[in-house]
Image (cartoon, rainbow, N blue to C red; front, side):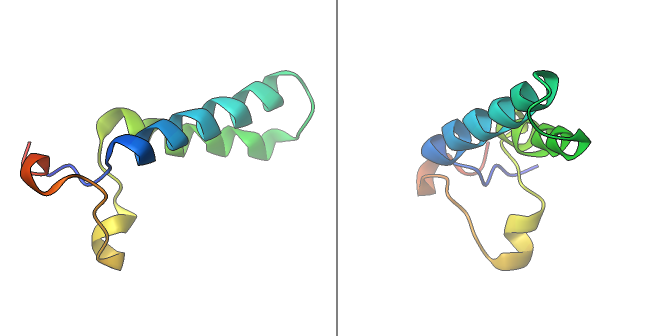
Length: 66
């Protein structure tokens, strides 16, 4: 699997995912906040399945083949 999620993108996904999950656990937002698992998972894996469909890649050119 080729990585297509770069450094800044990964950090933002982790922050967003944890924020959504935290707000859900705190009872501030509804059950839909569990969608935060998606950006958190894609950040941890380094691959977003939507990016190839859109022709995007936020990895640096030399490191995208790992």
